[in-house]
Length: 191
Image (tube, rainbow, N blue to C red; front, side, top):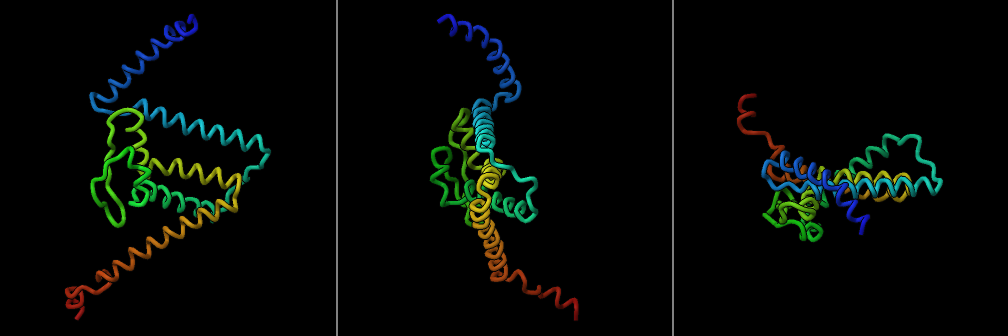
């Protein structure tokens, strides 16, 4: 018990400092700083473990990434992060942390974080933010590229193909809705 008591004694100033920082930062708003710190710690731990595993395997890291692969991974990261954060089909992943609020744009949903404060709030914010998820998805693609480039290119190609298809779907809808039809007023001015 002496060790536990000593840890408590030494940790007390750190806990006081953290409470003060949270109070001054949040100004009374519910912000999941501890949950966010936990998410950052999990991310850092996964990156560290992945880097250690790559190093232990003796695998050579690529000296450079060809531009085509970088673009492929970027588009795939965009599409997969957005799919995870906004797609109706992936809502079961977000459901424990969010509440449905209706449609949001083409084939996307609007959701609100259910818990206010704590780990569930932090996870809910992460899962509903495509910008936030992109960090995790991009890291996964990069680690995949470093360890299994062919398989990762194939997975990334799938997401990039879907992103390209999305653009074509929006273009097709625009054409169907008359977006490319000349406006009657602009044709009168030319006569």
